[in-house]
Image 1 (cartoon, rainbow, N blue to C red):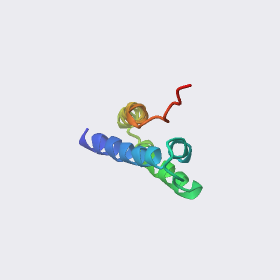
Image 2: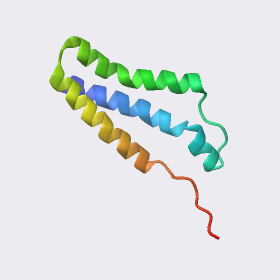
Image 3: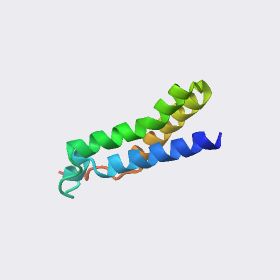
Image 4: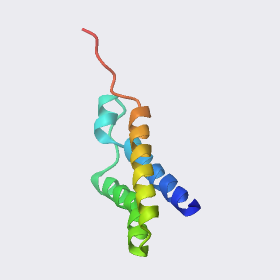
Length: 89
């Protein structure tokens, strides 16, 4: 159970890095360019590695807990990151 929690936190941290470096979000907020395509792909693959490890190990319960926890963490991160500023007309 503790390993699953560590895997969820690791994936959530990588998702946070993806969100902070999102080029479209950064341009919309006037913060300049974000991460390059290769770094974004590397972070995405790294975020999926704990789930792949659980699948290869054959631990279905840990995989499902990781999948659900990472999905909820990703949703929370995207909701918490600042949105693009809206222009009032």
